[in-house]
Length: 571
Picture 1 (cartoon, rainbow, N blue to C red):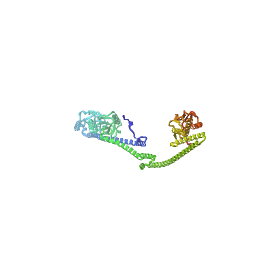
Picture 2: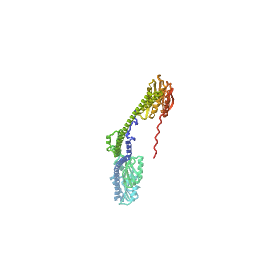
Picture 3: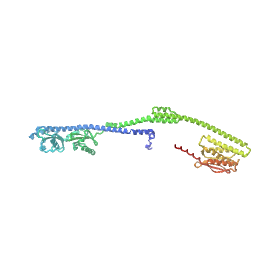
Picture 4: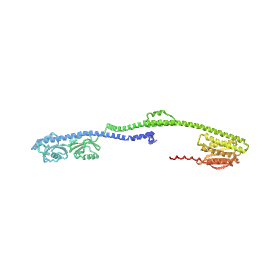
């Protein structure tokens, strides 16, 4: 069998049709803002944790930048020291050259040491090829105009085949317009900075105060990260912060090598998370969600214990009260319920007690009514039997044949009334009566009372009629059968056919025929008039009503529905 989602049966107690389901939905919606806030708090905690971690990495990178800064400061101090050395500014340039060559040998990491005269030409240097070269550099102009040392990055120096870090200091002992320049190669120093970096995937960018990139080393950036970095540098040194900041998928820190002149930006790509770090992040995200679920569960438990469960107990109590039972065990469960529910339970108990008393009184009144009804039925039956006995005695003692025949017919009619009365009150029903059973008993009683050999053939279908119409039906049947008996000669084995069936739209058909009838009874005219009278009472349609040959067919329409009671007039 193929499995379907419809095979899953959701508990009815948690559906929207139940109070518990609706309360669960309301609690979920009510605590939804708290859940969102909790998730936001978890995400903020994770974000702050990541930012804090990157800030710590940024602090390490700032230390690396500090080492580079110390190297450049030493370069500047060397330039200042040489600018205070009077031997470099004597008239004999050979003494200056020898001194600088000696210094170059003592400090192999220094690329060039030069003394620059007022015309920006190299007067002496540690390399002979540099003597006489003209130097155009912003560092020389800055040192000359400001009268203080300047440190920076020279992109295309005259004295070196590669970009260098340089420091220029104005002399304080020789001619005021002379300067001492010291430079060292940038590549080895930047490579050493990259080696001592705390991350493997790093990059270093040297920029000036306007955000112009002077040189860069390390890993390349994606187009998006490169575009974001360019936007950051374009804002200028006044907007650069000292802490770690995100650039695309990487983090970076920027620190000044010389304020407003030279800055080093160090960037790195965060290392992949370890399993312990992932566990901490998952815990930081799951803990607020767990707290939200605990809050929802606690609220649901409180509603279940203090509202839904007492209501269920009240429902069970109401059902027990409806059955007339008293369940003290379930009443004990409501001791801890809110006072409103406990009051409702007491009200229901009082109402059940009142209803139980009323039911007892109604049952007693019903027993008394049934007793009275049986007594009335018994007395009416006795009276009818007494009347039938008197009529029978009177008919036997009558000297006139017509008088005897009239008393006998009266006796039969009393028997018909007694049979109708018995069926009405002995059946126990107050709305309808079985006409087929009534017709069969009347016909058998009348045929049996004549003591003749007439055979009765009945074609009776189960038909029911209103109790108010039972007496009229009984007399219709009785008079029709009596006409057939009176018209049938005795001793010939005559046949009387009795038919009762339902026809279309709830109508009832009654037919009495006697194919052997050949005489007209003296009482036929009065019986026919009675049939017409009872037919009018039932709004029946008498199709045929003949004494000889006996053929009586009557169609009785269904009883009209009672008119609705008029609505009470508005005040």
